[in-house]
Picture 1: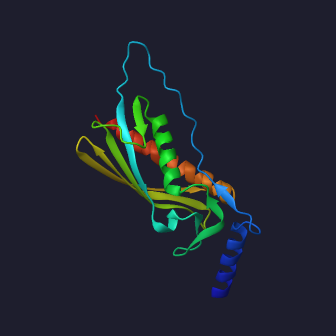
Picture 2: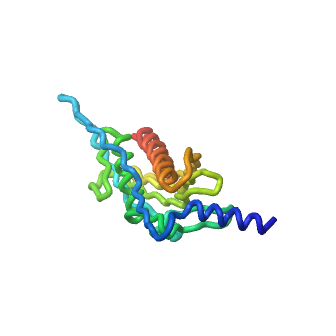
Picture 3: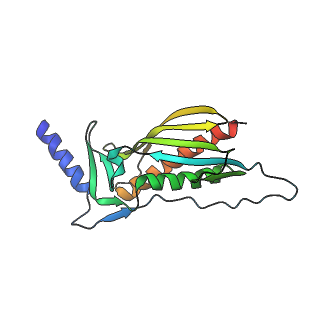
Length: 190
């Protein structure tokens, strides 16, 4: 029984790895920026959000895309790599997604002033899994007018196809879903 499990894991790893030493680099797709037009005579609220920090654990902070092979084992790819540090990609795409979801807001990765809300996100999972799903998990902390709001998130999405390309696209989709959830929370605040 154990021998067959080892063979299956070895086959999975072989199927997931690229042939030879051909390195492939992945970048999370950013959504197109939507143009926001202000109507004449109406002022926008210009609420401000600073996406301060995106933290990732050590196993996600390296160059390799991460794949979970069992309930307790993870593999960090040697040939399927992030094109730039994952925390930077997560921050850039979160700013873009929140900017699209929050018309009338100024969303930035730099401090904006004294009246800004501040968002920090800790990502604990951002990887593919042996059952064909991707995991996007963690928690975010929002500072709004001296008040702290903390929310956990755990998103699983099923890949429609095999491979790292599909896995990265689904991870980006899960990250975008969380941005929609964060934006909904921000829109409820006054």
